[in-house]
Structures are given as C-alpha cells and as structure tokens.
Length: 348
Image (cartoon, rainbow, N blue to C red):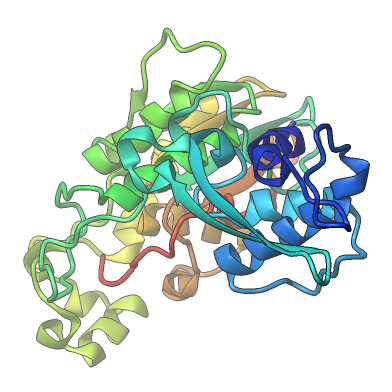
C-alpha cells in the first residue's frame, strides 16, 4: 500500500511535532499533524515534478500521496528504494512547520532499479478478455539503442546494435506491463536488443521455464549499403522516395518495404498458428517490423506505413478473429509509465 509506505517514511520527519505553544508533544497523533503531512506532500510534489498540478492543501490526503508516488522519478514503487533526508524548521510565532525534503532515488542506478522487482505490474489501457474465436498479439518494440554513429546518428537497420541503459529499463517496463497477461508464446527477432526485451517479458510470466521463440522474419529491415550513413549522406529526397515504395532506390544489399512486409506477415502468421484461440502471445521486435503488422491491421497501404509512430519499448495490441479474418487494434504504441526519461529515437 503505497501511501502507508510514504507515511512510514515521513513519520520520523513530523515526530516529535511542535504544538501551537512551541512545545514538543511526546505522542503526536496523525490527526493533529495532517496539515503538516499535506505540506510535506505538496513540497515533494513540486520538487520532484516541478508542479503542484493544481492540488491545494484542501485536497484529500490520499490524492496528494498517490500523485507523489506516481510523479517521483523511478515509478510507483520506488519509495522502498529511496532515502529521505529531512529537517524541520519551526516558527513558534505563527505555529507553522516547514519541511524540506530531498529525495535520492536508487532508480537512477540501473543495477538496483525498482524495475528489477519482478512483482511490479504497470497499468495500461483496459482490455477485454480474448474472444474464444480470436487470438491476441502484443507487439513490443525494443528499447532505446546506442546509435553506432555516436553524435552522428546513422541508419543501422538489421545491424546488431546495443541497447542503452535507458533502453534496458524501458524493456523492463514493457515486461512489467505484460506481466498481468498470461502469454502462451513469447517471440523475438534474432537481434540481441529484441531478445533482451523478450527475456524481460518472459521472466515476469508465471511460467518461465520455456524458450523464447526466435523468428528470422521479425528481423529489422536490412538497410544494405545505407547502414552507417546519416540521412544527409543518403539524401532526404532519396529516403522520401524509398518510404513511398519507389523500389528503384532500394539500397544495394538492402530490402524494400514490400519485401519486408511480406516476410514479417509470414512470421506473424506462423506465430499466430502457434497460438490457441482465446489465448495471447507477444513478440518483441523493431520499428519497421511493428509498422508492417500494425499497418496490415489498420488497412494502411505499404507506401504510407512509414508514417506510423511506434515509440521505443511501446506495446501495440491486436486481436485476430479466426472466423471472419478481421483484425481489431485495441491500442497502438502504448508506453507504460515508469518515471523514465524520454528516449532518443532518431535514425534506425
């Protein structure tokens, strides 16, 4: 119970308290210190999120506390991993206590991140049960990567680039969201950035003693001779033509969007064939791969799918009706809220 944790954390700060006469009370009650606690919560809210988000001291205490827990860096459960350094300044003349508090969150250290707690479940959009005549697929994009061009963002496509520390945390957040669903299969691209995400999904499932299913068809688009080049080196006009499926500008050694979409949908159908009616599976893959499956579900032509937004470590959910063949998109590019900083997402 998050507010209980917060109250335990703040209790030493307001005890002993000082009454209206400026004398210490030996056994202060929570009721007599409720305003002090509210002031503390508002102070924390302003100093961790930069805003009081419209709350006043008349706001319910539970509302203030839940806002603090959700707004602080590191996510909803980080109070167990935070140290609070506090002092109380008493002004006996006006009987007010000012509490200054500074938070040091261990969530800044990825080795002790709260997201390593496999019991955490991150909330998301409401989802109905999977219909008995349908199969559900959660499409997860991998987290932020370390661009191989450094401060010169280059296209890398199917190259096996490394996740950044933030990207690893994003992958854990996606796994923490999917924990609430019983997944029949967890699949991935053969690239390590996707396999890392799939492992984070699988380790949070009830049944962990099984293998991740690797599909070559879920590999990111092969950029061919464009790999390692910036958009300026490729040419923006050339890239615009490529995105519009002008196959005459397909890079040497690379593949076009129609070629990519064909192999991705074949892999998707193979994964769905392994999924029973009324069940759900997940695949951790890539930007262009997710675009292929999402555009198919939305009926968006291949020459327009490059406009689809798919955030790093975001989740897209689609149901496939095995009787009618209809595809229902429940949500797309949903990114679980975990208090992480915004990821960099340039050339890919």
